[in-house]
Length: 377
Image 1 (spheres, rainbow, N blue to C red):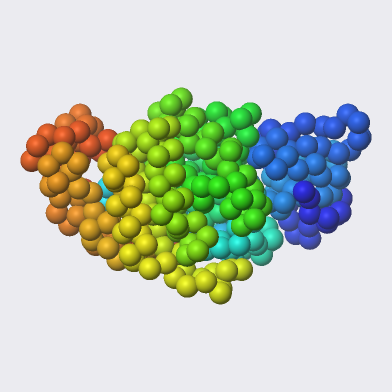
Image 2: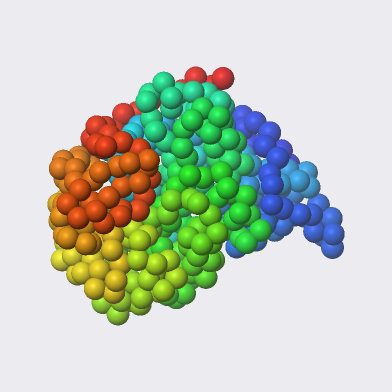
């Protein structure tokens, strides 16, 4: 699937594209290429773009048109990604670009993910400038978010390399829809990932996202069993579409069998947006019921989000039920962990708590959202 635009070079004032990885020329059709980054495998002719809009055939070579360009930069709480077991309470420098390789009808960042590349990309930054700014701001990590970093993988990996040089961690907030060929190199640059598991049927992915479920499950298994990337998973529950007790139960059973009990799972609330304005918001009881179902299936760290819920948003010890990390929205309260050498345990009973921790108390960023600027150079 390709965008039918046929300009031969850049678009207006758009600079020349950055050389892309994960593509090959089609010998049987001179001048045409195939993108091998995501399972859509777009095959644009010269001047055309893939469905994501940001990967383009420029004169018989595939380029990324958004390298070094962003829709803006903002310091967020890490819990907003959401990551609850990755340096809790710390701040994260977040940014995205434009475009997406899926077409979710319920997209809650559609103004970015569906934007043409020139529409929203007002900010620019080199990887080195971005990593330096993150350190200046005291951010523990940088998150590739708002739209899917898979489609700007070259830029994300260059930023990740600069961040590692600067001692800053990197986070991919992604749908995990990536090919077997690109998956290892992309995630080798990441320290943590939150993968958006949008539903648990192929029909949902095909009808509501124009994608497929299989590659996402492959990504989850790969991250859990073949990498050291810290993994958490999010499922947005949409009334009447993917929130049935039966579907949540199947998801939880697969999760336990394939990822184990210690990968955190977040159930989050839908609100009407983009092309799904006719459905109601997710009731709080739907999230609470899904959490109970997943915990009953054997998952130890199950959370609710996108609505205020101290019970579902906090971390509780599966060994003695003590409150380990209290959360009121994105603000942290009581802290019941001991941390030694990066390993966290329940202060009351000693139960191990998986994740990435480096302090005996949480960070103090709170729920602030701070837009920032970054010098281009």
